[in-house]
Amino acid sequence: MNLATMDYFIALAEERSFTRAAERLCVTQQTLSAHIAGLERELSVKLVNRTVPLTLTYAGEEFLRYARRFQAERRALEQEFADLAGDVQGVLAVGIASTRGRLMMPDAIAAFGRERPGVGIELYEAENADLVELLREGTVDMMVGTVPRSASGLVVRPLRTERVVLLVSDELLAERYGDEAQAVVNQVEATRSLAPLASLPFLLLGQGDEPGDLSRAMLERAGIRPVARVKSKNSETLVELASRGVGACFVPVELAHAMIERDGATHLRTVSLGPNVVIPIHVAWRASEHVWSVIEAFAALLDELFGERAL
Image (cartoon, rainbow, N blue to C red; front, side, top):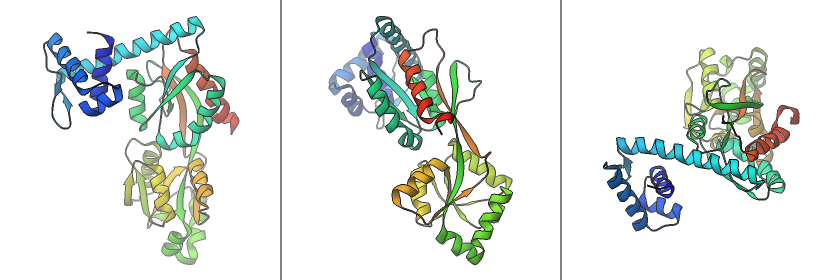
């Protein structure tokens, strides 16, 4: 068994396909299959069910945990010795939600490329809970998202808070409330309760998404059982639907403003839900005796560009 074999198995486990894993690894399917078969013989267990899609056996799931742990330790070793050698090169794996990444990463990566031209960035886009798991298992070096400050084994630094607003088109408000539309919006903003908007159709994010969970809690407090016209994992899709009058959605105010400015969607209304309807955003990485200097440098840049002081 060697480190390459572990890399091969991780790729296969993540892709769930010999074809896709081989393409990702830039090897032939025959080479990949031979490595996996040799690994199974060495361990005297079956690791994968060669079905479509491919699945892991119980032994395969257990081996995957060990392989990821070894891969993370190897990355840490390479990073520490790169720092000792003064060699500022390598690939920084960053986990971030896709919508947040769209708003933050272009500026951050461009600026970091000027500071550290020898460092590449590999983005992993996923929902918040998945990002925390990717960080713990060592797939990513750091993440940007919501992480409990008390999370064991992680260094968690506050970055900023994102204020959540309700985005709805003027046409939908006029359709539901007529001449009273502005008065209804004023009542919501004054009372910070969604109760006056109970008759609106809503566009909701999935479970585990911070704005989605926050919006469901607010609707419940207002005694609203929402008519979920659309459910999606993509905030930008929901904004596009809101622009077409399909329903109202809850999004970070930065995304709302960016989409309105980009599309010239002046018919979209951002309804304030109050200063306390916010999502805390952190930068986090695994706690270790040695933290790769590139991680700390990228965290410092994010704070400079997007931290509370930069707003």
